[in-house]
Image (cartoon, rainbow, N blue to C red):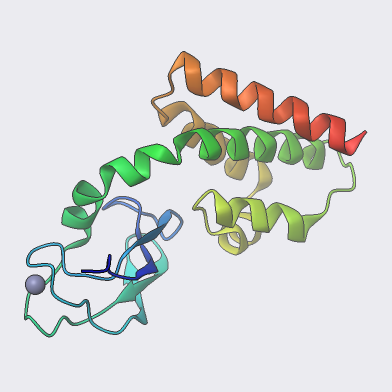
Length: 166
Ligand SMILES: [Zn+2]
């Protein structure tokens, strides 16, 4: 049998998402409980100190896939992206510090990086003082469980980017 097709699902990154933190996962489009086909993805909004736009769906098998169950089920997949997330968060912090010094930064590019890192950039940059936004991103970086290996990969990637940019 062929492997089931993958689709990207957007779910909250944690229960207390504050309307900011989401996960975008490219995973098989099958129910985690029975392996049956997952229902059609739609957009919904969930609330925790702010609205977050996430996918909702109804499975034909009748199983409800809770967001915390999905995070547990896909934890390997999530772990795999931590290095990239760490790298993005560092670059974002750097850019936001430049912003705080009044330097001209590409806001759209910054929002795109935030989205890739699973943070709602529109909300982060639109709704709150810059210093607060920087604190939130720094907190996210601090929460990562990074290994020496991941750190080395990050430094390498950062050096490559530097060469590209220079
Ligand atoms: Zn099922």
